[in-house]
Amino acid sequence: MKVTAESYGHAVILDIEGDVTEDTLQALRTAVEHQLNSEGVIDLVFNVERVTFMDSEALEYMLNLQDALAERFGQVRLLKVNENLAKILEITRLNATFETCRDASEAIKAIEP
Image 1 (cartoon, rainbow, N blue to C red):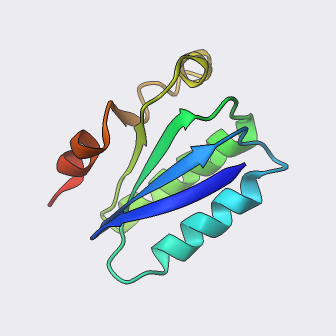
Image 2: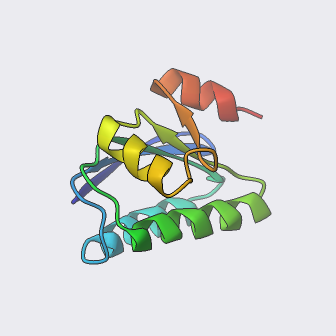
């Protein structure tokens, strides 16, 4: 799995490529922690367009992260949810839990204060 970040003030878009599973989750955790330790970052947008699979541990991490950011008045959003991930979110009934956006500008505008 590959993770890259692009900062937009208080928000960061994390581009994720590959499977997000128990075996690869640490790379995502490290990237998230690095961003959240940056001054002023409270919102995370995950570009999941190139995520081929997300297992239950990864989904649980995303839910916990959403709760943790809410305590800081931040948000988690998913960007460019592909067909595979949409199906996973639907099966797990998490499709209503995560807010989704079709493009980066929409995601950033949606979380602007």
